[in-house]
Length: 220
Image (cartoon, rainbow, N blue to C red; front, side, top):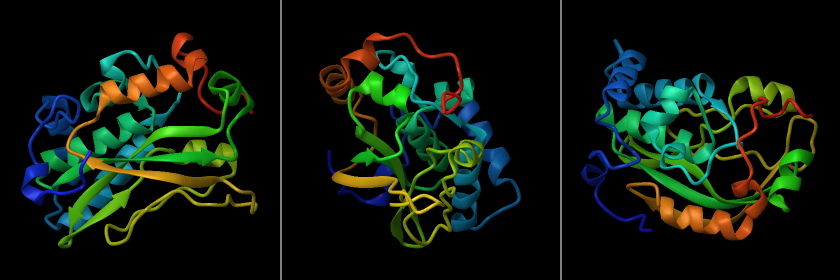
């Protein structure tokens, strides 16, 4: 993956950041209605994806729709990569260059159920979004919705459109939370084949299992 390229290269629709999907176009138009400033529109889109789409790691990771922006919007839920793709797609639909970034992170507050399924607390290919606003690229992480954060006692990640919004190293009680282990860079589209291959190798129990119907966090 490459983090190079001019901003206009990150305005076109791709198979998974499908910014030309009618539902994504309508979503972006509704969220950005009445606002002309790109930074303010980026913040609106971030908040709409963060809180309007519920986070869940219990997905069918072999299904392409698990990673596709329009499918995430239709479901109203998704894991970090899908939500990052949706934010990127909505931004592109609004005329804001956007790409999807990836990092490996260690979640020190991983739930017992998820840790058992994964066999680790290391999350490969955690997804976030990079938006080009104010003449520069800024990172935005819309993964955890406000309701989920309240259940876990984690501070919701805010985004002002001017500085990077990355996971907090500690939660509201001072416990260790997220640790960035490796930054993988950013790309115009989601590298689904590479992600699936990595998940199948590292998380066979999670990939082989059926998606869990219960909302994430309800087991805590």
